[in-house]
Structure formats: structure tokens, C-alpha cells
Amino acid sequence: MSAARSATMRMYVVESCLMTYSADLSAMFYREAHYVDWILKGAKAGNLAIDQPREFDFVINDNTARALGLTIPTSLRMQATEVIR
Image (cartoon, rainbow, N blue to C red; front, top):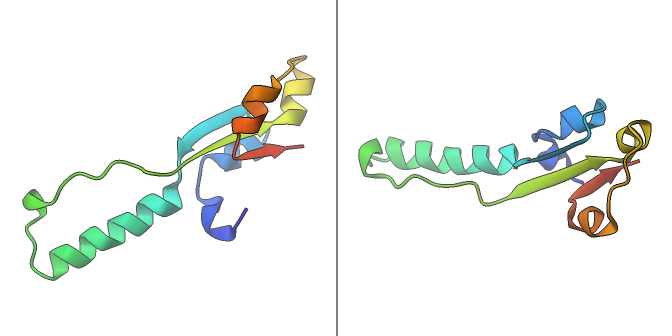
């Protein structure tokens, strides 16, 4: 996982949250920079389309699952962006 992708809700999972599914905040900030650029170049903010998040991260904390006595299905693990062990 790159340093650029560290701006997600991943920090909560690292600190013992069971799992999180959230938009990649780094990618959203990158897109926001484009909006600022367009506005500074003269575009009217009201004319710009609203952009939805395009990248999501699904992170599972395996240690927390074990501590809670939960078994995370393999099919769910395979969909995760990262499994913290």
C-alpha cells in the first residue's frame, strides 16, 4: 500500500476497528484540486458537475476479528483492499 493511499479510514482499522469500507480520501483530494484549478481559471463553481468518489478501500483487521471470536469468510477477505494481521 502506497503512502498516498494512507488517507483513508484505514487508520481506525489499524487501531483495532474490525473493518471499514470508505472512499479513498487521497483520490478525492486529488479531484478537488482539479476543481480549484478550474475555478481559478474562470469556471463558475455552479456550472461544475458534482463528482462522486471513484476509488474505495475495504480494510479488515484480522487480529480484532480473532479477539471477538469472529471468522471472516474467505470470500470477504478476497474482496478486501488490505487485511491487517
